Every structure is written in C-alpha cells, then in structure tokens.
Amino acid sequence: MENMDIWVVDDDRDYCELICEVLQDDFKVSSYFGATDFRAALKQRTPDVVLMDINLPDADGITLCKELNQINDDVAVVFVSGMNTLEERLKAYEVNAVDFIAKPFEMKELLAKVTSVAHYQLKKRSLIQAESMSRNMAFQSMTESSQYGGVLQFFRQCFLCNDYQSLATAFFDLMAQLNLNTCLEIRGEGIEYFTPQNGTISPIESNILELLDKHGRLFDFGCRTICNDKHVSFLIKNMPINDEILYGRLRDIIAVVVEGLEARVLDIKRQQTLNKVFVDIKELIDNINTATLEHDERFSAAVVGMTTEIRSSFHVLDMTIEQEDFFASMIERNLKQVNSASESFNRLQSSLAKVMDVLSSSTT
Image (cartoon, rainbow, N blue to C red; front, side):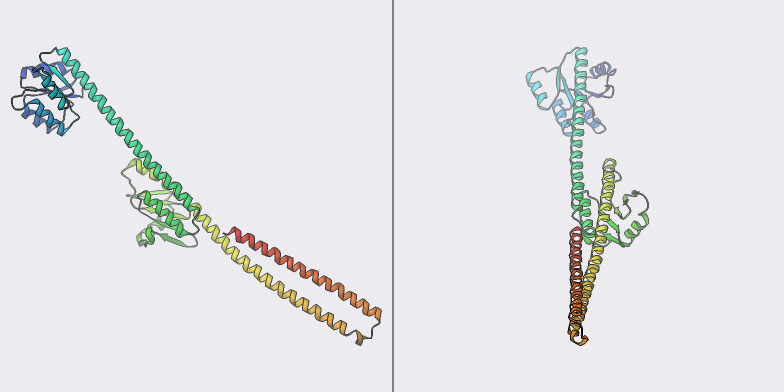
C-alpha cells in the first residue's frame, strides 16, 4: 500500500511529524497545518485517505470534509479529535467520514485503523472497477448481439432479393444499423454502383472502387476500408480505426457480409441466366409447335387430296373391282399411318408443354 496517499491535517506540527513518522514506512504521507494549506493542495492532487482534526484555527474539519466531498467523494476521511462526544461523532457520520479516532490514542491503534481504512479504499475501488468492467462488458455484449442479429436479418432478407437494387437496399439497411457510411459496387453483366437512398456515387469513389477491387478482402486507408470479393466491393467511409475493439468486431462482420453479398449476386446472375434460357427455350418450343402444326396440316391436306383424286379416277382407269378394292385398302392403311403420325405430333406437343411448365416453375 505504499502508493496510498495519506494526508494529515492538523495545526499541531509536532503531532503531524509524529503521525508521519509512524505511517511513512507503509504509506505515502503528507502533512498540512490548516485549512488554507489543505485547500491549496487539493488543487494539485487528491489524497486517498485524510486524517483530519475537527478543530482547526482557520476552519473546522466538518466544513472541510463537505468541501472535499463536492470535489471528490471517493476520499476516505478519518476524524481525529479530542472532543470524543456523541454529537461530534454524529457530525462526522453526516459528512460521510469513515471512522473517528479519539485523542489521546495509541500509535498502534492509529496504524491499525489507517491500514484498515486503506484496505477499505482498495476494496471499494476494486469493486467499482469490477462493476464498471461488468457494465461495459454487458453493454458490449448487448451491442454485439444487436449487430449479429442485424447480420442474420440481412442474410434472411438476401434470400428474398431477386435483383441488385433490392439486394443493395438490404445491405444499406444493415450498414445503417452498424453506423457505417458506405457505397457499393456490383460487377454483373456490367458494373453497377449503389448508394443509400438511391443517391449518386461520386466519380472519385467509383474510381477508388475500380482501382482497389483487387487489393485483397479488406484494405484500409485512413479511416476508410474497402471490402472485396469477385463480383462485389463496398467502401466504408467512416471505419472506427481508433476504437480497436469495435474496429476488430466490424472487420469480422463485414468480411462475412461480403461473402453473403457475393453468394447472392451469383444466385441472381444464375437466375437471370436461367430466365433468359427459359425465354429462348419457350421461343424455340413455340416455333417447333407452329412448324409441327403447319407441317401436319399440309401433309394431311396433301394425303386427303391425293386420296380424293384416286377414288374419283377409278371409273376413268377402267379397273377391275379387285384392283379398285386393292387400291382402296392401300389408301385406308396409309390414312391410318397418317393419323398415327398426327397423334405422335400431338404427344410431342404435350411433352413440350410439360417441359415449359417445369422450366416456368424453376424460374419463379
């Protein structure tokens, strides 16, 4: 306890010297011989424990204790007085004194009481520090919980985004929760830039994003940080570089966020490609259907026309009945084959329609 600063305030110089001699082996001790000296010293530093006489020539100890409480109520005051009355002890208690030593006293008693008060001060400060640390840790835990909750909400929202603009909106909502000012670049078919509230990105910011998109996952410059992935980059303009704990936590968060952005951008690109393929296949199937129907109609018309002409020419050809029956049966067989081919075309159209239904459900 050598660092504990003990002040002795008493107008009796011999008494002060004696007290200092008893305490100096265990504490840092200073003596003041009146209220004026005491007040002047308080402007320079604050003691840990004060041994104060109640009756001083220029002010009473009770008044000085009140003044000390207004400056710093952490100082432990022990009154030392020859006026050992209940009234004096109650006055001392009212001004938050921690102990009262009546004169005359044994030096062993004084040393024991001062040591006890010093231990009390150390324990009190330790508890205050522990409480402060606990409060800070609790606040930090709540802050982290809120931030990680925002990240989870962002990932849930990502699954509902089917275009880059809605994805950017979800991203900026998360950045606002983290108190980060950002702009976003997405590299799809071309390069698209996004800012909060659909603002316009400055030329220099777009240039920085373009120049630094190959400088690693996280790149710091000044109070700014750029975060990159293959198809996504975003610039943080107010990274808390001076707050080591917050800075470290935010770096972890944005490293995860950029991965989520990258994954969703790839999903959106695949969805857009699939939609384009669907449109192309639909157009191809429509063309096949149209061509099939046209071919079927022309073929059927040709067969019917040929059949009609053959039947109408039987009397001109001067054929026997057996010959006419032979040609008639041959025509019937071929007409059945034509009908069978037509049914095959119909089954093909039905299969193509089912393919369209599957593709349509996979793109929605």
